[in-house]
Amino acid sequence: MDHLFAVAGQLATPISPTGLATEGLLERQHLQEWVIDNPHVLGESVLVITAEFDRWADTEGVPARDRLDVLGLDATGRLVVVELKRGTADRDVHLQSITYAALVSRFDLDTLAQAHRDFLAGRGQAVELEMCRQRLLDHVDGDWSPELLQRPRQVIIAADFPKQVTHTVVWLSEMNLDIDLVQVGLWKVEGHLVVGFTKIYPTPEVEEFTLAPARVEAKVAAQKLEERSRARKAAHVLVAAGLLPDGTRLRLTPRHGAPQSIREAILAWAGEDARRATAVWNNNTAKPLTWGADGKPYTPTGLANHIFKSVTGRTPDGIRGTTWWDVDTADTPSTVDPVEWEALAGASLADLAKQFSGARKDWTSLHTLLSAIPSGRWTTYGDVASVIGSHAVPVGTHLATCGQCPNAWRVLTAAGRVSKGFQWTDQRRTDTPADILAAEGIQFNGGVAASEARLPLQTLQRLLDG
Image (cartoon, rainbow, N blue to C red):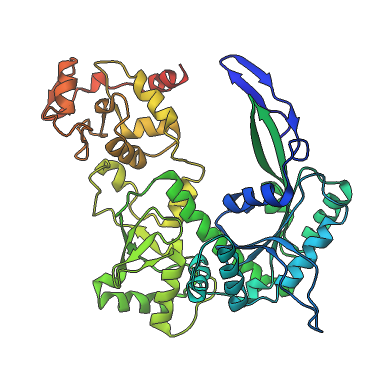
C-alpha cells in the first residue's frame, strides 16, 4: 500500500508509515499471532495446523534446528508453509521457505494431526488426536490427497523484499513452485496502530497468464487443484453475495467430470429415491449443502463425489460439483420476488457464482439509497439491486431480516406488489406497506401500485450518487 490517508469529508490527510521494530513489535509474539488469528491473509480458507514447529530429525535421528513459523492447510488439500520477517526479508528467505516446504512435503495425515493437537494443547485447548484428524479431513473439499500434500504452497510475509528475492521467486514460480510474497505495513493513526497485508506477488494477472503449470508430471495435480479451487471459490462467492437464502432447494443434474453414460446411471439411481436428487443450501462456506438422502452436510464437490462413487463404485477424479446442482425455482422462498426467483431457473451453482462474482453483502449503499427514496414513490427489488450492484434475491432477503433499512416499505416486487416475506421489526404493527404507501398518495388497484409512482432507474442512480 503506497499511500494511506485519514479522511474527514473532503479533507484527506496523509498518514506516515512506521515499522514493527520501531513500535517494539516482535516477529514471534506479535506478527505471528496476527497471522494465526487472521489466517485469511494467507489465502482463502486456510486452517492453521501448527506454529513454531521444530519436531523433525535427520536420517540419524538428530533433531533439526529449523523452526517453521506457521503451517496451514487450505481447502484444496494443500499445505501452506509460512515464513515471517518483521523487517526487510533476508536475501535468502526463499531458500528457508523452500527448505520447510521440502520437509513438510513428506508429512502424512497422522503427522499433521499430531502437530495440530500439540499446537492446540500449547494454546490451552485439549483436543483428542482423532478429533484433530477429523478436523483436517473435514477442512478439505473432496478426498484427502497425499499427492497434493507433496506440493505445498509457500507464503513469505515481510515488510519489504530485496530484488534478489523477488527475481528468484518469479523464476521459481515459472518453474511451477507456488510462492506468494505478502508485504506487511504498519501505520499509526490517531494513536492507534493499523497493520495491513498486501499480496504483491503473484498478482491476479500473473497468476492467470504467467504461472500455468509447465511440467508434464505436474499436470494431474495441477488440474485437481484447479478444480477444487474453482469449487471453493464458487461457494465463497455465493455466500459472500448472499444470493441464496438458507433453505434454498437444489436439484441434482450431473455434469462436469461424468460421461453421458454415467450421468444417465446417476439420474436413474436418483429416480429410485427422490431424496437422492435434492439438497438444501446453507450459507456456510465449509459445507453449504445438506443432502436430502442422509441429512448430512457436504461441499458441492464432496457430495458429487459421494454420489458418483455410490453409483459406479469408482473414485472420481476432477469433478467440479458446483456444476451438478441447480436452483429449484419451483420452491420460492418467502423473502424473494417470485419473478426474480424464476429467472434463476436452470442455473447451476457454478453459473450463479460466475454471474455474481464480485458481489458482496455490504449494504451501506442500499441503506443510503433507501433513505433517499421520497414519500409517494416506490421502486423494485430488481431496480435497487441493479443500482447497488447486487441481485434482487439477496436484496429481498436483507430487507426481510435487517430491521434497520429505512423506507423498506417503498420497495415492491417487479409486479408492483408487497412481498409476501415483508415483515415489520415491531411485530405489534398491524398496518401493511400498502397502507402506508396509500397514505403517501400512491393508488393501488387489485393490490398493484400505480406504475406512474415508480421511480425510473436513472432517478435511483442519481439518488445514490447524491
